[in-house]
Length: 512
Image 1: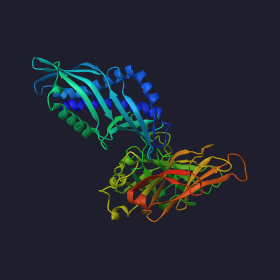
Image 2 (image 1 turned 60 degrees about the horizontal axis):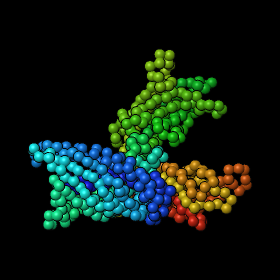
Image 3 (image 1 turned 90 degrees about the horizontal axis):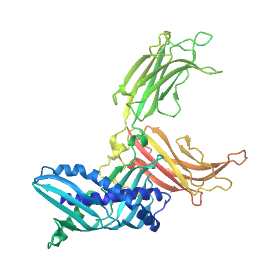
């Protein structure tokens, strides 16, 4: 019975997953919760059914091959194989489709699928010297799945995974013929099989349990998130090159991690000094400690013209042990060609201290259990207040987009994020009331921003020359206490001083 119920589950989802993918493509334009009629789509499925039948059956064969192999040798079974496998000529029908809006980067579909088909499914079991045929007839299924296409990505087909689950136990009705006899005519067996099927399939796929089918290679769509902070102390340099006319230099150091588009950080300038002492500290955001490299470049500051390069060095982060401070005393190089025989000039040394502090795993997984609508259920294993409300961390602000932002003179919106005196700006999107920015800004803090707010404005700027070039389209102040408590918020906020404007913001607080 376990084999039979699992088979029926595979049949149902073998059909449901291709439908979910097709529906996702065709109904991607819907953005608000609604139930839509899909007569046109049923006509489309009817025309496509002969081809879908073959494709789905091929998928079912591949999914059951491994499962059948597990039964070989048990209960004297020598072989299990399909003698016939066809879903028949009658396609399933979708009686309605609800498209649900969430704050996450996903599309949630809830179709109501009914299938009263005429499949030809014959399974053959070779048991000792006997050949037993099991035929499934008059299959009828009513199922209400939730199909989630996530995450939405800018790579065709625009989503990386299909997650399928059942909102309620499915209704399954069928007949079964063994060796030509209808075993469902046995008193009490039909009801027993029905209950068993519902229980088995529901235990596998009833919400919140899901069947996830990868569509895209994760490596092609993965967006690397911060995993820690690199603490850098630029201590000193020694015996630097003389670049000025008076036989000295005005050195400073630029430091940056590879793979980052953020501007490089700089030390102060030490005037007329070939052995400068800085003892200056910096923090850099780390996304991949196994591949990223710290770049150190020493320059001679000049009041006029380009600054002369005094030397450079590279330190792979994989040399570091988390939480352990390591000092590096390095010879400065002209370039990355370490073994260049023509570069024998001594360029001096640089001394730095590095400490890599990875984020705590509990703070990176504070999202809790979310339902398909982006709502969060309270987590029972949340860290204590004393743990969450202490220590340094990273505040990440993702400005995803806005809706219905309208200016009086022009609509070229961009967002401005203001926090602790720092100002960050998104790119401008021309001629739109519904901009999508998807830009992330980060602030490294020494303590949790429990009693602080972050201010976000949406501004439109005229592209040409004008005395009234800028126009505020709305603003919002977001309390950060909930971000510190929950680790993450993902919400849409109504903009102040805007008639219908809404801005979508995701904010994370990650501690080290």
